[in-house]
Image 1: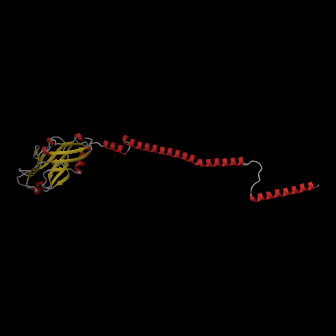
Image 2: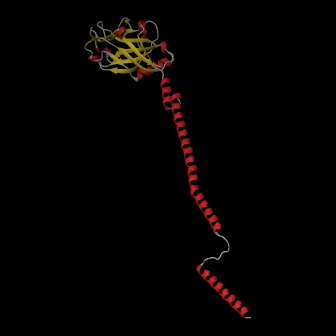
Image 3: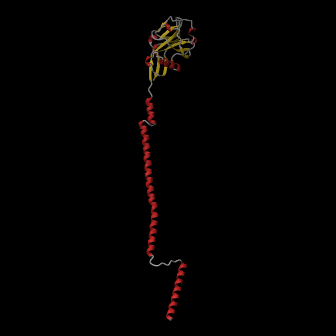
Amino acid sequence: MKKKKMFIFLSMIIIICLFGVAASCNLCGVPIEIGDTSDTNTDTSEKDISESTRQTTSPTEDDGQQTEQTSQADQETTSDTDQEDSGEDGDGEDGDGEDGDGEDEMEDIPEPTIVTLSPVRDETGCVSADGSLVNRSEILVGHSENGNDYRGYISFDISDLSGKTIDFASLKLQNPQIFEPRAPLRDFRIGIIEYGTGLLSSSVVGIPGTPIASLPNTTSNVELSNDKLINGLQSSINGGKIRFQITLYWSSQEAYVDFANHGNLYWKENTSLLVTYF
C-alpha cells in the first residue's frame, strides 16, 4: 500500500515537472521537436543558397543578351551607313547625282559658231541721191567733188544662216578716208534696207530703210552691235531672206553746195559683218 502511494506521488511530481518544463519552453519560444532536424535544416540552407545564387547570376545572363543585341544593332547601323555612302558615290559616278547632272548639262550646251561675212561685191557701193551715178568700187557716204550727194549700200549673203539662231552680230567699217569738214552733215546714220540681189543700181534710190543707229559727225571707224541689228538679222533669216543689207547716210547730206569731198569713204575690204549663232 505504501509503495502504491509512493508511485502515485512520484508520478504526480514528474507530471508537474514536465508541465513546468513545457511552460518554460513556450515562454522562451523554443519549439519542442521530436527526432533529428539537422538534415532538414541543411537541405533548407542549400535551397536558400541555390536560389540566391540563381538570382545573382540571372542579371549577368540578361546583360550578356543585351550586349549581343547592342552589338547586332551596331553592325546593322554600320551596314546601313556603308550602303548610303555607296549609294551617294554611285549617284555621282553614274551622273544621277548633282555632280553627274551638272556634267550632263554642261555637255548638252552647244558651242556657238562664229563667222565673218564679207560684202557681196556687185551689190555693194554707193549711189547718188538723184540716181544718176552708181559706184560699185567704193562706199562713199557724203558730198563728192562733182557736186553730188552719195549714200552707201552694203549687201551680205546670209543664205548659209538659214534656220540659225543669232546670238551676236557686229557691223564693222574700218580705216575710212575722212573728208573734212563734216560738221554740217550732222549725224552719221545706219539703217537696214532691202533692195534684193543683182548689180547695185539706181533703183535703190527712194527705198525706205529702218534706222538702227545714229552716230556723231566725228565718226570714222564703226563697230556697231545692238538689239536692232541683231533682231533685224534674225528677222531676215526667219523670213527666208538670202541677203541682209545696210544703208549709210548723213542726216543733212544736202547741206553742201561746193565742189569738194565731205564725209567718209570706206572700202569693201575693210567692211564686214561678224555673226555668232547656234
